[in-house]
Structures are given as C-alpha cells and as structure tokens.
Image (cartoon, rainbow, N blue to C red; front, side):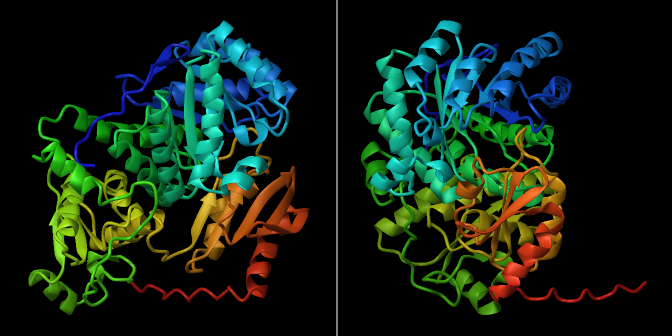
Length: 529
C-alpha cells in the first residue's frame, strides 16, 4: 500500500530474453502484417527492433500461418538475432502445436482453447521439450461459457480461468509460464491482476505477469488509458513485461511502453520510498482499503467536491470551492516524493482512520517535461487513485504545458479510470494479421464524425476473435467480419451483419440517430486574422 517493492516472480526464458525475477520489466508488441507475408512481417519486426522492442508476437489463426512462422523465424534470426517471437493462438488449438516448433513462446486463450478441445497437456509437453515458454492469456471479453456460468463475466471469473490452467502447468512441473489478464476496462483489468496475484500467492505460485489494456485506442487517449491501467499495477510492483496496445503501427508502442517502464524503474533505486510506519500501523491503515473492488471513499460534499459528485479537475473549481480548500473544509494533498501513490494513500487512509470525511484533491508538480511525457506520468500516478475511489479531484501542475492541455489531460485520466465520462470513448484494437481493413484510417474517420457525442462508447475492432467480447460494454460496435465487410453492434447485439465497408460508418451513425443518441456538432466559429 505505502512502500514500493517489486513482486518477486520466477524467471521465464523467451528465446534470448529472460523476464521475471529481478530483471527489468520488458516491453513488447505485436505485428499487424499478414503472417503469410514473410517479407512484410520480417521488415516490420526489424522496425520494431530498431524502436527497442525485442519480444514480438504474430497471429497464427490457421495452420498455414502457423507453418509460415518457420520462415519468419529463420529470417528474423538472420536479421534480428536477439528478437524473441511469440505465436498468438485463438480458435484452433492444433495450430499451437505447429507454432511451438518455430517460436520462443506460444500464447493461448483459455476462453476458446478449452471450447475447441485443445490438448493442453500435449502443448505443455512440447513446450517443455523445445524450451518454449507459454502464456496463459485470459481476456475479459472471451471467457469460456462454463466460466461465465459459474463466476459471471467478472475479474473473479478471469482468475478462475487462469488458475485452472496454471494448476495444470504446475502438475506437469512446467514453470516457463507467463500470465495475462487483459480487459479494455481498466478497473476490471486492475482488479483481475490483483486478485490473480493473491490467488497465486495463496498457492505458492510465482509466475511472471504480462500487463496490458486491450483496445486502448490511439493518440493521447490510447496512451493515457494504457498508462492508467498498466501504471496502477507497476506502482504496486506488479508486472514483468508490458504491451501498450495502440491502434497505430506497432513500432509506435515501444517507446511509450519503455517510458512507463523507465518511470517506475527509478523507484527501485530511490533511497526514500516509504513513509515511517510500524508494521502494525501499516496493517491497520491497509485494512481500511479493499484493493479487489471499487468502493468510493465516503466524504461530506463541499460544493461540487466529494459526496456523490463526479471528481473534478482543479481548473473546474469555482471561487467558493477554492475558498473551501483554503479554509480546510476540503483537503489538497501534494505528493512531492518519488512514490506519490504511497504518499497519497497514507494521507487519505490516515484521514479515514480518524473519521475525517473531508473531500480530497490530489496535487503533483511535474516540472518542465513535455506534454507527451506528462500524459504518461500523470496518468500512471493519478489514475490508480480514481480506479480505487480514494480521491475527489486532481491538480496537475507543469511549467511547460498550457492550462488547456492540463485540463484536457485531467478529464482524460478521469475517463480512463472510469471515474467520470466527459466525452466519447473509443474501444479500438491495435490490429494484427487477422485485420482485413485499414483500422487506423477507419478509427480516425469514426472519431472525426462522432467525437462530439458526449458519453458514448464506440468499439472499433479489426475482427471477430476478440471484437464482440472486448467491446461488450460499448454502446455501439464496428467489427470487421470479412474482407470488405463490417458487422455493426448495439451493445452485445449484432444489428447489421456483413455490410459493405464503404457504407458502414454512415449506417453506424444512422443507428445512433434512430436510438435518439445523436446530436449535431456545434458549428465551428471561423477564425479571423
């Protein structure tokens, strides 16, 4: 809760790379080229390596793609010998056995591996013989029907799915296993990872963790959402490798991921990371907080601050609310040390223990870092406090960024943390070899035509593998169904199936109009010289 310390995991070798243990957190990405296109894949892998990425995943949705991994691996070994390759398996478990002959790690999704009759024991044995690692990759949007019936579509269900597979790996004495618990909902994602860590600890498991927010989108929004979810876990010392999933070219993901890793790596070597607390005091304060579910701290409202009001950015406070802060009716807590989350938690839970119900605004100054860096650091610091319901407002300061940019960043952090919806949210996948349309261009067009619709969630997904599931809490969905064909969804219900791509955005807008959720964008005021 208050002291920064990395979770001690076991080591897993992925080709020339070892993750876990005391190793630095590794960064990785996934190609969006056709896995049958050897040259295209290898050229993109080379660009990823040039950006600093040494773990690269490729989709292997069929036997043809699985077998072509042999050629991709051979060319990669020649051009980028220090790059580790990972095969991503979804609906055909037999392809996992093929891929294991050619790659350094195989990722399977328990949600559909079981449903398709996958022989997990055979895959484990083959991975053990060949020195291939295995990732148990649980996705919130694709839990097996049996798991959903028993546990619901919940973080607890995700943990049950993962633990079932981990026990089978342990029973076969196979420990080269990595686990992930991904969701496009940052609150679900963070709670699932925390619950998994607790479940593994209870059974003496130390498998490394792969962190990521699925379908985070692009541009500032995608970076902020990823930093909120991944940062919340890195702040608690959880995570051994990360992927920032952006609807952009994959090499763009690497520097963003590395900046997050570097930000938290500095906390490893800092001399003063923890407040002076006895073990009894720390346990007493920690018992006031439940890290496994969202419960907002109870406060007495002061104007629009606290109570049941949505959290506010500092720039939104009116004169009376600023006066209340000055006079102590509400509290502003500034964190200046290297572990801001520990500082904030300590102050807030100390207030809670004393029965102090005043609203809290969090404050931190980031110096003169550029906006690109500020977004990641502020999202990683502030986001978790709103995911956990501990704060009522935020005050980001920077000497190099304008007030307008800070105001926009503040609202984006609150939205990414599911604390306040103030604009359209886009749940958009990064694309991969399964995608059959220009995902980046389409997302940009959908955003340009719908970004004025306050509070809607729109999913833009490359294919049906994770699409309908991962965008399950979206209001509307645009999903690639086949080359040149799109299916449109209202929530989980398919509304129009296999329609021509050139008509799809207009039809999506027509559905939103028919539902009474459309309003015309306000006309732009022309600028005058």
